[in-house]
Length: 232
Image (cartoon, rainbow, N blue to C red; front, side):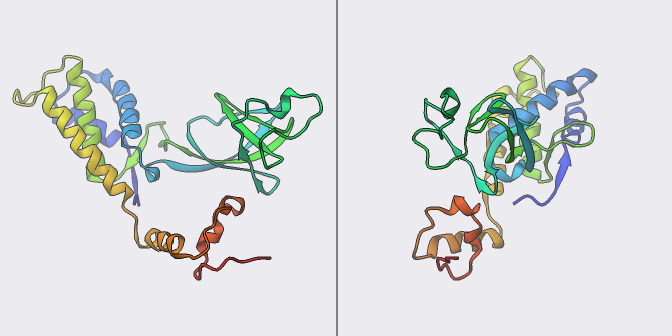
């Protein structure tokens, strides 16, 4: 579990320092490569959870800048359902609800838009984004395995472009092997739950009645201690 983040400038400084790099303009490439490493490692907590109000006009709202993955949507105090149907309500003149859907408010993604079953209004979007510092540099977990993973990914990319490591015994293959090692190590550390999350897993698994509709309450019923299905 991630408790702190640090600017990726710390990794970029390490690359310049450890590799004795003289090309001052390579930091722009390194920012892009750190973003690639970010997605390769790919565990949930490395991203920043954000919530935005999305304005809908003509059955569509623009996705926020920096979005990586949608967590959940909310419209008029109820979750919206993703609609996989090829025939959606805004194709029809009678304004009927989406076919093959059990809710009145549905959405589907057509980048850079989120298209909805209602023509105008607002909905709440919970999503994951890559965190950035005040200068726009990606923020990375303040964890040594993650920093090493980013360092070796950048080193691997530099060597792919012809860079020769100051230590001639370090080849492209060695850099790639180090990247894969630290990528897996940092991913494993990120997926390891703390005591609070382990307790939530326990509550989810030991209940006698499975919560097949937990999404309707935004998964808050998982916080119940006794696992008893509660009815209003």
